[in-house]
Length: 151
Image (cartoon, rainbow, N blue to C red; front, side, top):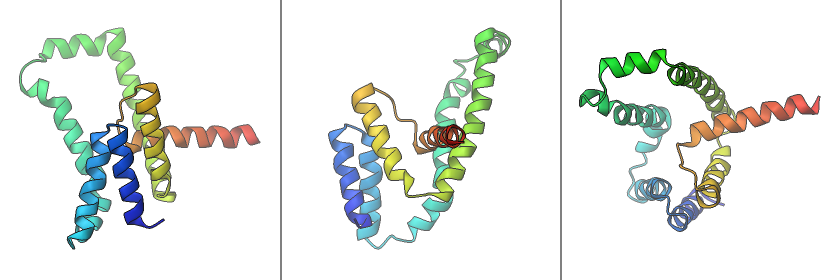
């Protein structure tokens, strides 16, 4: 299946699954491909993940910039049990994401499976897609567990 056919398939799946992010991403890549904006592909491949994480961090930090979160809120949340668990969860997620990034670099074709899995999670489990990096992290965890289990 060619890249264009796969992008069209992802566009249709995104529309059917009501996933605006998947549909928009596929559509933008199709537009770039058909309008000879192919110079964008290496940039997105090299820096797209960083740009996505940047925008995610910006959206998360807006309440802090707006003053909706105070220093007292931060201190309380960092010293409370939920806050300490959040720190541990953030550290673990970051470690797992590193493994997911390694998996994506070794096996970039896995992205299609991750997207299909995300769509299935949206449709059948009413999940919220947070991106292929976290999905790859979970896949890397499953892969490592399978290797250990096979021994």
